[in-house]
Image (cartoon, rainbow, N blue to C red; front, side):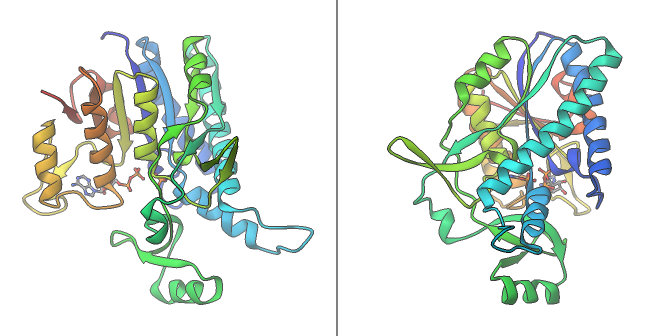
Length: 315
Ligand SMILES: Nc1ncnc2c1ncn2[C@@H]1O[C@H](COP(=O)(O)OP(=O)(O)O)[C@@H](O)[C@H]1O
Ligand SMILES: NC(=O)OP(=O)(O)O
């Protein structure tokens, strides 16, 4: 396999399996993730790792609000996003350290707290769509809406969750530092949780209370680091049409025209598979030879080797 620069977008499953939200459980999920990613690193590929934070940042927000007082103020959502980057980055660094040690790989994994520019007038602020935190019953959701003023929405048949605005990522503030770290041989973890949303006010960056979609932010990262491949890792081996129906068909190679056609047909669920396919199309369109892959963590290596997964590429 020719060595590539690969931006990996880690889905929730890679960090939190099932309802296992303790530090030990999430560290174990990160260790299992590291064991898969190291196969690509051993092949000579340069990895840049981005990850989601929906469940984690939702829990951090709730923890902030417990027992808050003047002396113990709750932190705003942008700061909670930064906390989630540090926490998940630490778990991944810790896991990669152990796996590198066991495999005799002389590399460092480094997490870069990443700010991502958004437009403060993005229409997303008028219509919160990004689910964060735990799942609730309808009664619990109604109660949270009443007592905390949260906007609650049903999430793909799995229960109710709090939703927050999710503006589109425009630029990655620390992009030069990310490129420098990759070039000096480090495995970089960046743009975690879609990055910390900030807007520009002359020389100042202002933290914004929102959560950027990690699929779109990872895609932006892939373009900015001039990646060859954008690898989206989620719970399924393939993107499918007629997903979950008896006539489900798993997709292997998808042209841009086919991918757009299936989007028009409504084949991909908004908030889950749709942003992944949209981000994959965006990356494949952004430069000659650029390919996007969507598969499960266990199949990451085989997908890059062309053996499985859904590949979206230009003609
Ligand atoms: N057309 C589709 N093909 C495959 N999976 C789909 C499709 N539509 C919805 N899904 C669901 O979307 C999930 C991925 O979205 P999500 O769980 O939100 O991602 P993440 O792994 O980033 O947390 C898959 O595990 C699958 O259950
Ligand atoms: N920020 C974000 O998109 O997180 P999830 O992928 O966990 O929803």
